[in-house]
Structure formats: structure tokens, C-alpha cells
Length: 178
Image (cartoon, rainbow, N blue to C red; front, side):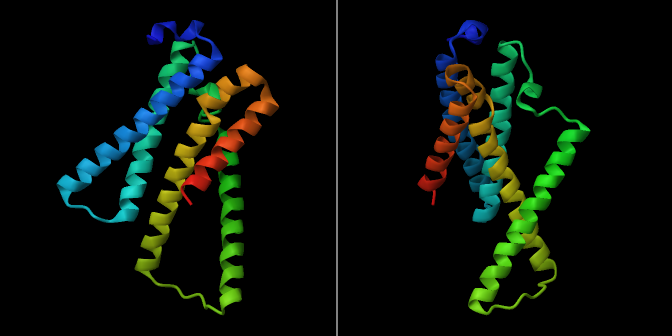
């Protein structure tokens, strides 16, 4: 189906088109990052995951933008418009996530009798890599399960069913990689 016909396509066809594009984006991201890292001699797995996830996120953003534009919409239709309210929501979510992470880390430390130590530059580097990886993974995941796909699921089955189906797909995705 040519993209000029996207505006008149059914939500089911649009969902399939997005799914095919998402799979192609994943394959291309792994190939591009793997090739670049192989050529440059980079073997750090954490850096590879961050780079692959960021590349996938960019590819999904481009795919989403293209599909939405063909339907006469923009990324703002997904709530990605840069405004002060979204920035506040992002900061609030980041704060809650940080508090939950510290709570879990503290509970685990107490459970095994571990102590916390500041590791200097190495600790800051590890935290920065962890933050980058988490951000990249969350962005790609949100684009997959709550972006264009959710928009088409809503058109097919309504808001509640779409959110439940998107959540189920997200759980299957997470369980698959655990």
C-alpha cells in the first residue's frame, strides 16, 4: 500500500502497516549499529544496547511521523508536542521513577546486608549509561505500544480495549526478553 493511500486505509490495515514498519525499523537498527560498532571495534554491550535503542527510537519516530503526516496529522497527535506541560509531566514521571528505583535499591541492599558506597567517576559513568539505556528503551517501547499503534487500536476497538490490548502486547514483549 502506497503511503498516499494511508489516509483512506482501515485502522486494521494501518496497524499492520505500522507493525511491518516497526519490525523493519528494529532489524535495520540492529544491522546499522552492529555494522558501525563492528567497523569501529566497539564491543561494550551496554553502549550497544543504548545505541540500538536510540536508533530504533529515531526510526520509530520517523515512521510514526510519516504515517501520521499521510493521515493529515503530526506527532503532536501522540502527545509529543514540546510544551511546558509535557516537560513538567516528564520531570514528574522521572522523579517518581527515581524515587521508586531508590526505594527498591534500598530494600534490596537491606535484604542482603549490602552497603552503599560512592564510586566516584566510575559510578557517575555507570549511572549515566544506565540512565541513557533506560531512556532509550522506554522511548522505543512507548513509541511501539502507545504511539501510532494505540491510535489505530482505539479506532478499531475503543479506548479501554485498546489500552488493555496495548498493555497485553507490552507484557508479552517484556516477558519475551526476561
